[in-house]
Length: 338
Ligand code: NAD
Ligand code: UFG
Image (tube, helix red, strand yellow):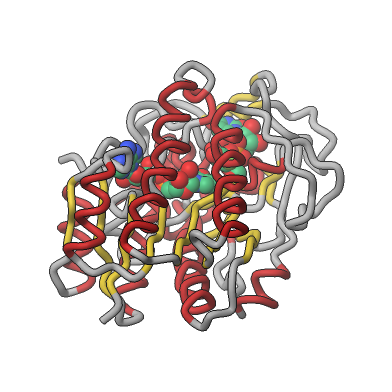
């Protein structure tokens, strides 16, 4: 059975991906420092998978820990989710973001080279494109990240492109995620943000379950059909499955690639709120505020490269995303806490 080191595997996207890896007959080795994850997620994943899951409590910046995990479990590839991901926070903790996201990736690559493994799937982001010069974004859209978080993703993309060219790590998959939302259909695992959620969907469900008063719509005067921001939301399970397709591609020796992972459809803030109202069967209070600094009016993916190269397309729609995220929220109003 192929062992895969999954850094950040206890987090939101990582946990869903580990379940898909197990379903496909692979063995995920979760490597996580639990800075933004709960050990309860592991218990729930084990319950859903019906098997024990190997977990290493470690930090991607620690070369010895990463090397030991790769060696101990004889890992054949790495899926590298571990990182810090809050755009606003990255503007006041730039040192930490470069440390974890960039240096952490360098450490992982060094450990891979030392162990002689050369397959890595990396979590990049649509944020590397910056202000759209055209839409939908294709993979050759110019890259121009506008936040420190985005800069760290871009730095890692450049690092991966360099080590691929040098031949030190040949099989590199760069996956540019659009806006992942939703949860596992069981309602047992999902996103559990600490404190006040920054992102739209977790905020909306907290309003729907009465934890917060109203959704702040950050601007309704954009040049979009209803004036609110438009994004390409993708169900986290579709996203998780794309990682399997990426690994299959690398395993088949088809080489390095970079793809967008989105549905290709843009949805506005108001459409997302309407989707959640349908899912929870009640109206969700809103309050329109000013634009959020740094926000882009509208962006969405051209996902056709992922289909051509990997045979992957997103299958779940906004109704599925809202239904599953609402089920998770309703069953776990405090995330993984009691
Ligand atoms: P998450 O915070 O839920 O998961 C990240 C995991 O990494 C957490 O379990 C955390 O404990 C772990 N981690 C953090 N620092 C670590 C360290 N130094 N060593 C080991 N483990 C560490 O985030 P997510 O939403 O699952 O995102 C996964 C990846 O996808 C991240 O790299 C993120 O930047 C990227 N991404 C996320 C989104 C999104 O909207 N969720 C969009 C684009 C890209
Ligand atoms: N929004 C609100 N109110 C909120 C939160 C968000 O109106 O309380 C709006 C935003 O203005 C935007 C849309 O909802 O128009 C989506 O905002 P999110 O914060 O959910 O998502 P972003 O597109 O801003 O950013 C997310 C991740 C980034 C990632 C990017 C692309 O936070 O890390 O998707 O993948 F880079």
